[in-house]
Amino acid sequence: MILSVRVRFAPSPTGPLHIGGARSALFNWLFARRNGGQFIVRIEDTDVERSSRESEQNILDSLKWLGLDWDEGVEVGGENGPYRQMERLDIYRRYARQLLDSGKAYYCYCTEEELAREREELLAKGEMPRYMGRCRSLSREEREKLEREGRRPVLRFKVPGDKTVTVKDMVRGEVDFDCSGIGDFIIMKSEGIPTYNFAVVVDDHLMNITHVIRAEEHLSNTPRQILVYDALGWEVPVFAHVSLILGKDRSKMSKRHGATSIEQYKSMGYLPEALVNFLALLGWSPGGEEEVFSIEELKKLFSLDRVSKSPAVFDMEKLNWLNGIYIRQGSIEDITKICLPYLQKAGYVPADPAPEDIEHAQRIVAVTRDYLINASEIVDHVDIFYADSVKLEDEKAREVIAQEQVPQVMRALKEKLYAAGTLEEDVVKKMLKELTKELGFGGKKVYMPLRVALTGKTHGPELYQIIPILGIEGTVKRLNAVLEGRLQ
Ligand code: GLU
Image 1: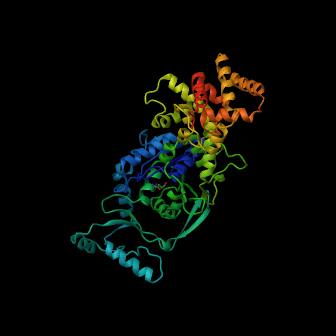
Image 2 (image 1 turned 60 degrees about the vertical axis):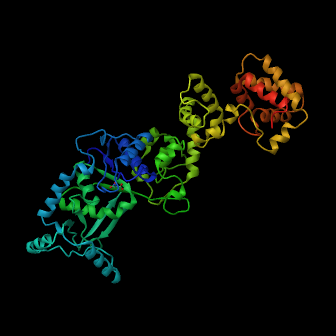
């Protein structure tokens, strides 16, 4: 009986956290939160050459940035630690010994060359390459002889040849694997380090994991793991293998389809809320048309029976669309905070900004965020506010500013500005309406030249948004540039 849901994310720290890993972590986290269970983060670092503490830190930082916390595991500790596999070697050795003593595992002394030869022979016969059990029944004398030759053994699991293992999967249903195609697999390498398929079982069992939610690419490992559970007399957890993530062209997601690591999205100015929303929809949907979900809503809605069997498609446009929504939805303070590093890097805002710099930036973010897909793009929209002078962007702008009524429009606005006390958006809106009425040219002949005079461009935020930010002085300076023929 399942008392309480316990799930885990068990990354190998061989690189930064990728979209696929983040999706697995999120599904586990949502499942735990939805069911009042526990989420554990454990590090699978037995690939000593490729694992690093930097990668581990990157993965943990990315999880935290996404807003995923864990109840047990690295950094936070817990009753079932340690939570790094390389710190648990004595545990694996103990269970390996148990399998050895009960005749369910055996020492294998085959060399790389011998294994390669076996592989070739099987391939030549058109058979699936696998270990055929040459060392299964070595006598003690034979073993001692091989050891005297200096060979170091690995430990192999004895796969019962005549069995079918059925993986009961919450996403895929029942999947049968014939053991005759599996071959005796290694559980302990000669350095006394366990292999993934063995360590994962020991850890999932000792950590009381109830549900294993992971990527589909592990499905073929699962029968091996079930054999280990059976051999040790342990209960098998519930499995859920979530689909592969494909690019829009239906090939496996790779760098070609866009950034693959979470840190890259962070540095491009994507919001964690948008990524979480996007990742949740990679293979899951609550049904219906709605696609915008906060993390709080996802926590209430997520269920494994709505995880799809078919591959998920990574659609960058959808991520951009979601990110735009969260950029417009967030508080101005929060969105400015996210935009600030980009403004600082571009030299628009000092490294150590004063409160008025922040306030100014907030006003700019408020009128430009509608145009952003991600926060880094802010720098493409703010030159009109920060530049000392304006430049005509294109031929169209040049034509507009050459119209004959332009000097009159510039002067008229100057007068109105000097007469105005404050420059709130409402005040400016009213002012522009009056101006158009008084000049009598029609709106287009007033607004377009003013837009070009103030920004150099024929498109962008509304004039009533731009003028209050530039202030009387800044606006007049740009109007004068037109009147004095300096705007080019
Ligand atoms: N370390 C494995 C990986 O990163 C974990 C697989 C599992 O969840 O069992 O793919």
